[in-house]
Length: 494
Image (cartoon, rainbow, N blue to C red; front, side, top):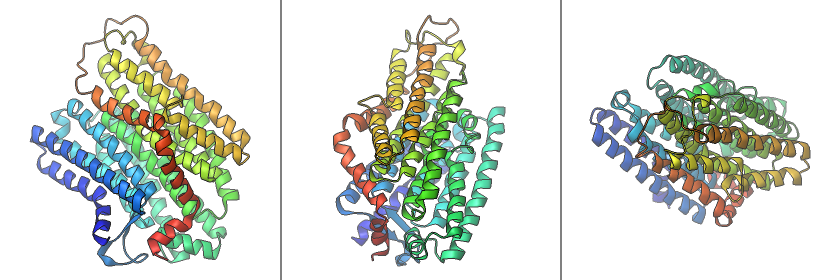
């Protein structure tokens, strides 16, 4: 079994190797694309195999250097982590193949594919790490890659938004490492399993609750929750379409994953305060995200703003803190990762075709680009949670969990507000594809752009129509999140 445990490092190691190779092959365009394509497909196959083994046999724990937990660096490939790592690699496959047709040679010269792979390594590491300090390290890995990717192209808008993006993340990183130091001074450990044991032994006292709120502020900033979401919409709408897709589908989801993991495993002892706060913030986050999406005619901004309500909805599921709501939060999380990636790629294609991101200057694209139009229409239905698509199952579980626990006002308000996401994205379909075709639209080849989007939409649809098969696994993850002893016993072998 120990040899199999070594496989837990592969979701991090493979993209690092790919990134290093990409740096050496930076000026060999064709070979660089072949290497990237082969690596992303191999990574998807490897992580899928690991996930199947984890669901069949239980979590895979890698104790690096044979230092047992909680003393060494621990990689914990449990069911939740591997489900998110597989979803990450699905998105990386689509983004890589989309980039082959959209990232030009000049952009490749600035190490696009190197930072692309490092971003995937950082995200996968954040999902798999078993201690808070290494969570901080992997955050910095993915952030450094994102700093390089956000300015790819070098426009004035990108430089302006990159400064804001960097400043807010530097601030949150400083707060993160400071909070880890405070937590270590109180508990004497940064291993998440041992933290769960010691916080349970000490009781979640005032100082520990304060530390928990500080950690929440860090992850709320990275996850773009109210009122700390202001930096996200423009920062995610100005980069290259592939970069926007990676950011929108992955980066904020790392933040909400950290809240899900830490406030079910470690800081679940004062739920009457912390988790009630989550529900309130979640509803307000949905409200402001929807307002932002409805207030702009920039189609990139519309999709970027729609990241915010989905994060708020997941936070409500964490706040309700029942097995059903936690399963719903996980289901909705993987659904949203995939569909946001697809939507950003679709919008990127529309902007290429129309030559503008202003919805008022578009129209009639359905005549010349019907496949793009119907991809957007299907993606809109998936995003809004129309049955039988994946958004419906996640939303149904979240609503059912909220109502079962008596959170009627928050649940109903969040559901009604989230329906406005359908209106905000449907505006793009009607404005860009309906009506008379505008003369200034150019003829642009969509060869190589439709398949990556269809790939993501296929998995998103599968999450919905195959819900009877997938739901039991997600329900099992909900059970393990509601019972921290499962994670603790597997890591500490108690």
